[in-house]
Image 1 (tube, rainbow, N blue to C red):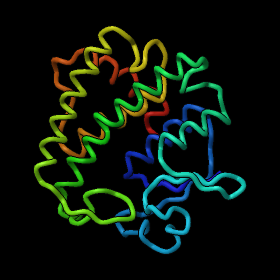
Image 2: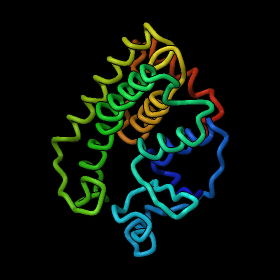
Image 3: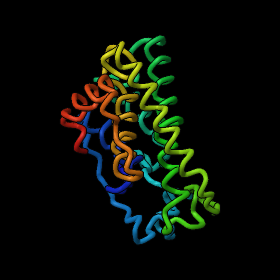
Length: 210
């Protein structure tokens, strides 16, 4: 397998962490977003949406979208499972992963892409151009703050985002927290002790540096 990725891409990092958790080492092919390589003909032939990451299977089939890539990798390498081993576990883990992605990760992306001058005309990633809406920057920040509060309450009851075991939901939350701190200067508030306890523990996993 080949993984087209960018070191600066939070979405790419989500897949790299999952790969590290499973001990998988596909060929990593860097895409320089700063130089706009994602818009070039070579990469567009791999992923017409012009976003990273993209996983290319052994037979040449290319798949994008982090949740799809992650689920595919978990299906073909089920140990350790990061999506659960029973239908109930899979439902709960997928639910929390989706919530964190929509309410946190996507909110950071919304705040960044509607503020950064270098993304003018590219407020939404993908094949089409969209103008920035500055008001969405503050809304994105508020959404992240709300997610932090919600997850602090959740993690006061459970050791991990989706319950009793580390899962793909924790990967999404970890990357969201780091993305928010770096991109919009929004870190976990001191009073959110459960979330901070979780963050300190998960950040110590070897995969976190992927």
